[in-house]
Length: 112
Length: 112
Image (cartoon, rainbow over all chains, first blue to last red):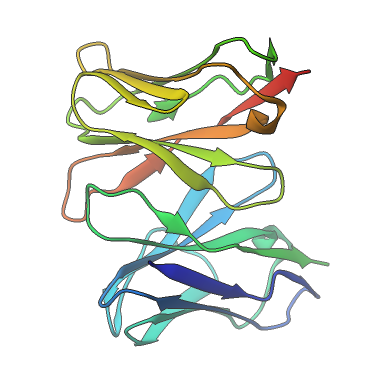
């Protein structure tokens, strides 16, 4: 079965510091991978998605970036965090367009 | 108009009752519909998917889809305190990668 590993579970970072969140996948090959953010009291916002190594599509302009250096690895980064970057970051995969998502356990980021 | 709308709740039902959660969507070309359960502080978990008009049952859960009315619902029979969570409706639209849009969720409280 498919498994998504995300770490760390929680993170407190100062404004202006860099960020790197990693997501790895097991049990599947060439998955479509996604980064979502869920701000307090708000819905899930799609940040990036990737259909393969080196292929990244961005949904919203912001100070975040994503990379996919390996088939089963998806990384979310920032050079300088903003207060507004606080939220619950979720990595997800799905087998195809008509399938639901499998989410990782998430990283709760607080920017102070 | 929001693309996917849900009543934020909280919806309170007594233990053993039927909980009815509703969702409307704006894109008539939407093709796939999903319900996720999200416990506080945890990541969403897929519980139901439905693709054609009518009802789909899985244990105590029934998803109902009416494309003409652009309406999808989730019924939970014999509600248990463990069903207390936020339920997210998600809709897959048209387009190259069939973007998924989430509602903001309905919080369900099952009272013992």
